[in-house]
Length: 566
Image 1 (cartoon, rainbow, N blue to C red):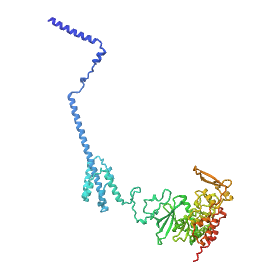
Image 2: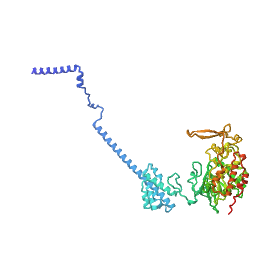
Image 3: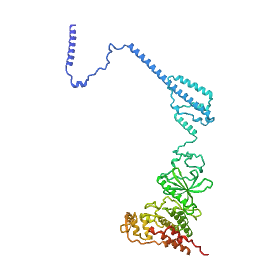
Image 4: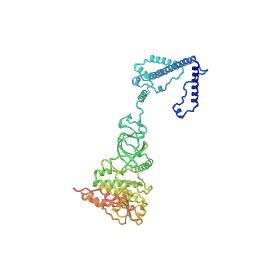
């Protein structure tokens, strides 16, 4: 027994020594890698101050009770929200009922016409935020019952009452519809793509005066250039109906109108462009026309008569007597390529010169005589000079190279020499030639080429006249040789050619005879007289040009065409 106990003690001592030796030996890096040290993840034992299990159970119960309170609170909130919505619906329905029955008091049939459009935009923002919501809701219910009992709302209105106010899109549509019906189309959208403008009068009596009922188009009277937008059938100045457009110039539009008065007479209205310069120029034209009317009360000197003037939509309107067509249209219709008959030519030339004699007596220069500014009546036997927009007094003119239309422009205007009534004589000669032949006398594409056309017919200008010209350096050099501006045939660039010797290359008599191929003996005599008259009216030096009095005494004008013997 002793031996066994000893052996056991020895074994235990050996094991303890071995473990100590193992602990005392340092571990190698391989052993550390193979057997890493593990950290303990066991939670620490509770300390003495921790709660007991009974306390934890109590806390759990208290948390459950708090959760139940939260759930009840949320349920109450949901109920309150629903009540608020319901109160809003009832409040909105009450407002609708009030609107319905107020309109029924005013108009007995309004409920039938507008039952589908009863709504108010105020309902979208209606909110009940009172602390005592239940009392307010109850009051609204009582009011609703009283209104229903009092007015006995119909089934259709009750359906409208039950509609929800929250549907904002449908409500907006009904609001728009009711507003459109209530306005009865009194206000329309002028920028709408649809034609919503409804006239209160017939189409033929639409007016555009300052006191017109149709005020929707007040911004559309003018085009971008300031011209008046003309619409046939419109009424101007509450008196004149537009029947047609006669023409358009630099200064104005011209329309043919009919007076709505007893006579139903026709007139021409010159509607001046909405422009300060055009307005001031037209005031001068009115003053000249008034002076002509005073000097010719019997209206026999072949100048168009002024009837009156007025303002319309910002435009100065000049009311004039109306004629049938202009002289250019007459030439195209009755004398294309061969001219009008000799008898009409003599009559028209005489009447035109009579108008010039009146202007000379008044000290007025027309400064724009051409077939477009000469009118003829319906019977084609009366001619009148019109369009005095460029006219001026003889002592109130300044040299300008672009006065008068280019084909009818006198040489003194191009050169810058002071001009007088003789510029109208030159333009009249060009017009008479055009009536006789159906062709334009001078067709230069510029002032420089116009001078070349003059010299092709009349020869070279005198040195005296060239020296007086304000713009002579543009066309003549220091030797008074003509400087022709033309394009090079190969390069297309403009070049200047000096012409020292210019010989006439046109024969006026031959051109006139060519226009009257089958002329009688008496007509051939008048052609010779006409050639002589035109030669004297187109003298390059204005001081040598025939005066209007001498023109009227010339045989071509003074003597009528004799009748051929039978």
